[in-house]
Amino acid sequence: MMYEKEWENPNYKFLSYDVDNLNWNIHYHESFEICFIIDGEINITIDTVLYNLKQNDSVIIFPRQLHSYETEKSSKMRVITFMPDLIPEFTNRYQNMLPEKNDIKEISNFKKYFDAKNIFEQKGLLYSIFGILVESTNFKEAANNEESQLLIKILRYIEKNFKTPCLLQTAAEELSYGYSYLSRTFKKRMGISYTEYLNKYRINRALYMLSNQNHVQIQQIAEECGYDSLCSFNRNFKHFTGRTPREMIKCNDNQK
Picture 1 (cartoon, rainbow, N blue to C red):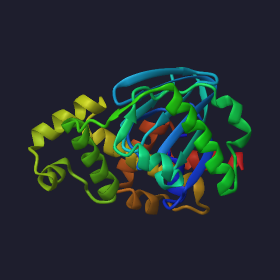
Picture 2 (cartoon, rainbow, N blue to C red):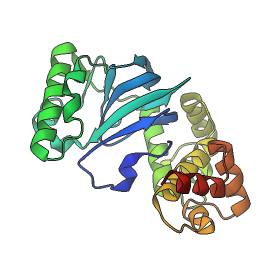
Picture 3 (cartoon, rainbow, N blue to C red):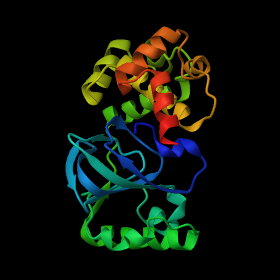
Picture 4 (cartoon, one colour):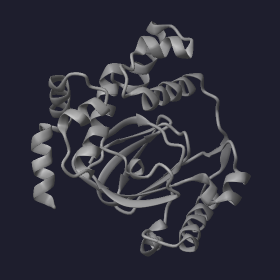
């Protein structure tokens, strides 16, 4: 699975779901994200700090913290994402602050509440987990790192403009940075070029649409994801997923 669950409802408050074998380049959310490892092993990098996580390990990722996932063999993870206003007492007290360590122990005791449906159980779960976090680490002022802030601006530009040509040159002009500096900074922090990331982001969106819509038209999805050429869309889709769009549709139909 590549796509991100919150795309299903951008106005969500609380989402809890399992994800297998997650691999994803550096990105960020406006939400909190709790990752609990059910099985296997995964590397999660948060603001350049690498956490090697195994069964029953967990981390909490704060809003706008840059992070990435890498599964070398296999992993199964429960992901809980929620908006900051669901825990206002914590958010107000620790505004503009980050934990010195993002990993957290002992939340396996709360597994039976991971699928909480009502807001009282959800708040109870979250405050219990964040209570453990507060007791287990110190907090520091969030650093205003220029490179990280620039990267967030570029990622936000892609999110907003991926349906258009979304050229790096245009991003550079809009953000008032030099093209070469933007290109170099993006490649250094992301490990891939701007164009490679843009294509991966577009295919990620296409994968979600193919997996969650009935009677999909591949041409329409290609256009909605920023591809004028169906040939380019098919080529990039297979590059990132190992299947053509039609093969993916057939695979999804067989699993229903």
